[in-house]
Amino acid sequence: MKEKIIEVSIDLFGKNGFTETSIQDIVEALGVTKGTFYYYFKSKEELLMEIHLRYIEDILSSQREILEKSKTAEARLFDMVYMLMKHIEGQGQSARVFFREMQHLSEAHLEDIFKKRDAFRMNMKKVIADGINSGEFRQDLDVNIVTLAILGAVNWSYHWFDPKGELDEKAVSTIYIDFMLNGLKKA
Image (cartoon, helix red, strand yellow):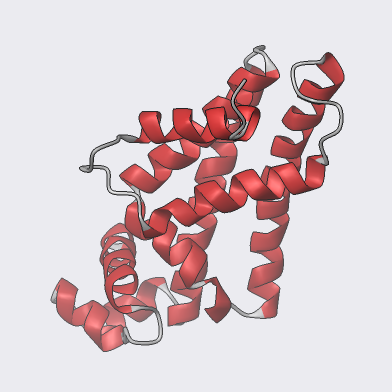
């Protein structure tokens, strides 16, 4: 039942927003009582935190798998971008809830999420720094700005990316990496 509550809540939060979705809306969608909800979660915020933790822990786990493979920095960076796009494609509502509804978490909960989010960012930053140090990437790049630019572009994709659209997540990832590594200038 806990998984069903989470699944239905992700859908409702994604469609209607966290503040616009009541516990009553959640239990009505499930056909259960509020007692069932409160058996698994103390509050709607606790439920939101669970959704956030699952999302960030899942992408951190996937990132660790990518980092364990000994590949070039470019390949690891592509794999990270592609993995994030796959998560947006496969868990679009979870991504939407993660990025859009974070503001509704308490400071204590945010601290936990921010630590995990920062760990993800630092891992990506290290891949970019490795690419600079190995000569794969330009030496004049600011690692912090490049990392934030990549994450900003990819994370914002949940707003517009349509997995049934003209381009799938692999094609979008390829365009992102090509643009990020090669820019707009004609060679």
